[in-house]
Image (cartoon, rainbow, N blue to C red; front, side, top):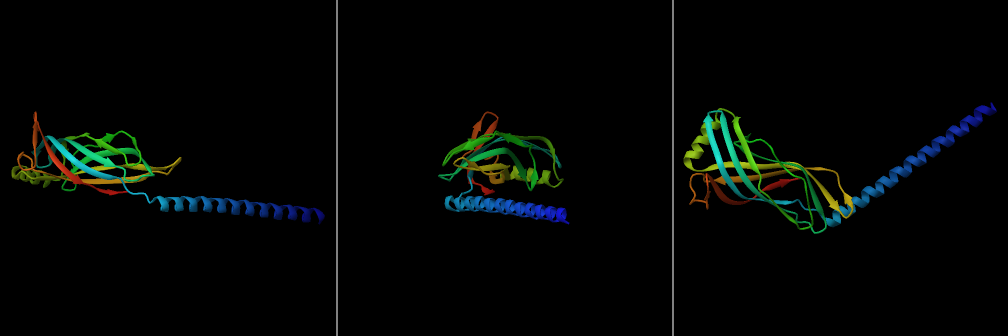
Amino acid sequence: MGEEKVCSHHKNKRKRFLRRCCATVLVINFILLLTILIVWAVLQPKKPRFILQDATIFSLNVSAPNIISTTVQATVFSRNPNSRIGIYYDRMYIYATYNSQQITYFTTIPPVYQGHKDVNVWSPFIYGTNVPVAPYNGPSLSMDLNNGDVTMLIKLDGRVKWKVGTFTTGRYHLHVTCRANIPIGNTSKNNGIIIGAAVKYQIQQSCSVSV
């Protein structure tokens, strides 16, 4: 009977110790989380701002009702509006869509850190050769090309991390959509500049950003 009481006493003591440890860990985690939330609320982080500055069209062809080939160089301006928060851009991809269908492959934008109020400008080539699309998109694009008015979306997808002092958050998904209204074939309508076999169109269009 004496041994059973001793064992029972040790078990109860161990349970109380484990409960205290768990309670301490929970309190510490709560304090850390509360501190991060307070700092985050004080700093008021803002989403990065993106502008599609121009698009240079090297080729935009319809070879069949369901086949499109595209080569575009897009210049994208990005600014960090935060004065106390830096932004790490990680795993960024850019591509183009037409009528809700992707018409180019993914082009990778190298990872970069954007400091407080800093600006980055990217001018990647976006291309797709003989990309299959819905049968109605080929004739639709041919009609837009004949009318000299093509609308496509330049999209950026990736992940970002926020940096506050020495603290860096986890990754957040970044989605950027830039609307490009291109008066293709009409250089006088929208400041089109002929560059060899290509035409550069000034756009200066703000992009929608979600994080």
